[in-house]
Length: 70
Image (cartoon, rainbow, N blue to C red):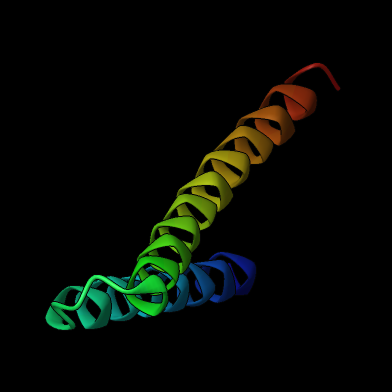
């Protein structure tokens, strides 16, 4: 159970930092390279967090199906 809590904390942290990058880049209305890079980093962090959730769910179901045959 602690593994799920730790994974949840990491996912929440990644999504939170991603949102901070996105919001900070949108508050800078100049449209320069730094704001685009910050937005790109924010979206990438959110996508990685979603990918981590998907992989965790797939691993959970793979473990459950493995235990049924034994």
